[in-house]
Image (cartoon, rainbow, N blue to C red; front, top):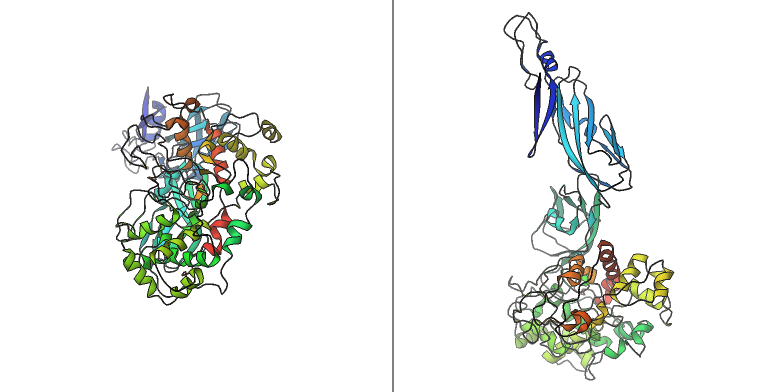
Amino acid sequence: MVFQLNVVRGQSVWRRTIPLVMALALAACGGGGGGGGASSSTGGTGGTGGTGGQDSNSAPTVALANLDQAAEINQPFTYDASQGGATFTDPDGDTLSYDVILTPDGSGLTSAGAIISGTPTSTLNVTAVITATDPTGGAVSDSFRIFIEENQDVRALSGQAGLRFFMGRSVSFDPQDWDRFFEDPSGNGLTVSISLATGIEGLAINQGRLEGTPSRAGVYAATITASNGAGDDAVMPIRIAVLRSTTTGAPALPADPFDYVAYAQENTPLHFRQGGNNSISATDNTPNNNPLTNAGARLGRVLFYDTRLSVNNTVSCASCHIQAFGFGEPSRVSTGFNGGQTPVNAPALANVRFYRRGNMFWDERADSLEDQALGPIQNPVEMGNTLANMVATVENQAFYPPLFEAAFGDRNVTAERVAQALAQFQRAMVSYQSDFDTAVIGNNPNANTPDLAGLLSQEELHGLALFQPVNNNVLAAAGLPPIQTMGCNQCHETQSQIYDRPPQNIGLDATVAGGGATGDDDFKSPSLRNIAQSAPYMHDGRFETLEEVVNFYATGVNDNGETSNLLREGNNAGAPIERFNLDEEDVAALVAFLHTLSDESFMSEEAFSDPFAQ
């Protein structure tokens, strides 16, 4: 005869069959010719048939169930299913022995005692049952799964690049909320934590949360770590921007203005300055009546960071367009002076001077940067001010009239001059020091000697070839076969990746909601420069990661009747939407290329930083 010992773990019931003679032996240790003692699963004392009997043995129990584990094909795997003795506990303090059964066979894994090891050879889900047995035969089991896949590493996605906090405002950030920015093939669920490279005044990590009230503006480095409990971690370096919530006093400016003209024009590499096909310089939207000057851009910088341009001294242009994030923002939509939210995400500002059409805002309702500059000031959600009140506020700051005089020849403060100065500062924001630029110029900014195969990684070059056509000889030099391009550069043109066509409907939705430039849900495409730092994406911030964006363009574009011909087969009106069969390697490659457009020099350049910061 046999009986079954049932161990319930989650929703599964594991039944270990134990011979009855063993079960009787577990109970027969009570003395005195007594009757049946307690079963091994419950423990207890001897029966009623005698006196002076011994306590019966208590079987071990599960103390810490094993989590499911992840293994990779052709990668050595070792796991201690006893978890160093923590999986089971024995009420009697007995030493336990272990046995592991793996099913099905043929996984490449074997067991010895509690240790599972080997090199998996095929994709498989393996069930592991570990049984702990005490010296008298009392036993209990725990089960878990081992998922064998091509790649089981926890992976950080290319999502939000960091956090934005404001001085004097309470913070409570739970890093667990960021588990969506990681992939975990094991399915265990992730534990996400945050660590700071340096302290942030007023903030501390308390029980895993970043909490407090920041008291000093600045940009700080931090790390988000995700662990799946199976020995795999992924780390995501982030930046934390602490911004001023109000402005008092005067800015700290150098005696001589920064040389914005040299930075944005004379010092740019050859591929920004040369003419011919795909010329960047030919797309410059600077008007004749507002050329870039050092004094004008200096004034624009001060205005850009001054929260006093808002009605209640709480919001500046830089509240939403943050240098650390490529002058974009790490949130889906913008928050205004009174806590209201705009319907759109703040676009990044790098290289706005090279948008040939010159129209600004997602729906291009402003004809120029000069027109755009005054829009947020008057917007009832964003800054909530009037131009007259803004001008009066600026005039009343003693440091402003001399700055206006240096920029425009006299101390007269007008809304038009405010707009011109802000536009000059934004046109000075030229991004040209990325890894991609280095590969294009071949380490010589004044020569046309690209070295794509030598200065981009194989993965980055693979992604570039998906983005735009790359000569097969260049690909071969990097060990890559010919690659069919997706033609992303049809829209993101020139080496500054600026869209040079009227706004397009890109098929975000299955039906047209009536927004955009013409009411056909046609929106402007910003530059891709520093795109890895400016998540989330699209005009409404609907996509949180670059992987989502790439997969959308590959397979997710909707045909809503107004979807751009540029997204159709052959670029033909009425043709089906073009689909691309990208595998995980392709998606990762395209994302890797987009990361080469990051310009850390631009995002830390003092000439573009907050002049009011402490």
